[in-house]
Image (cartoon, rainbow, N blue to C red; front, side, top):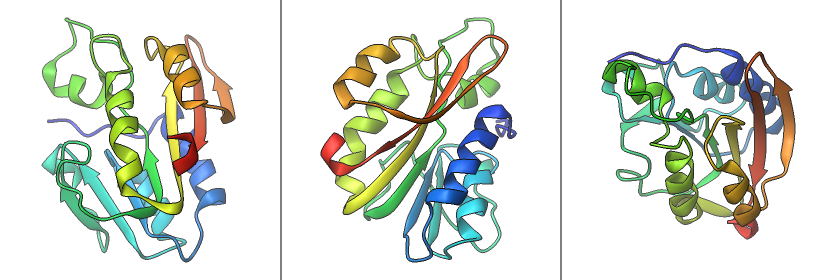
Length: 172
């Protein structure tokens, strides 16, 4: 399996992680991939857990790791949950190896929707979620309305727009 190497989306989320993480936060980095978000949060708080479905992504020095398909193996609650999900629509020509890191479902938003449906159970009362998504993430407008997603920041790139939103238990 391949590990998703940091790109524009990773760096955009990383900027927000730096400004939103508090020294007292208990942080969960969902779909850690290369570990860029977990490592960034770890510079601020030492209570960081990195999660990924791909066991190859779980070799992060000093950071607790759990192999899990979204929240399937997660029992605790967190102050801050980070997620740079696979968000592209399915491409039948993409190798299965890389599709695990890039494909968010048939339309692109299914993993995001599943994450949002499960996240509230793992968020502390005053917790926050930082979620990245793309203009290419399928019917993201429907999800945006349902969860009242208001971007903290956005960035335009050649063929897409990237967004980072902050959610709270009230918005879930």
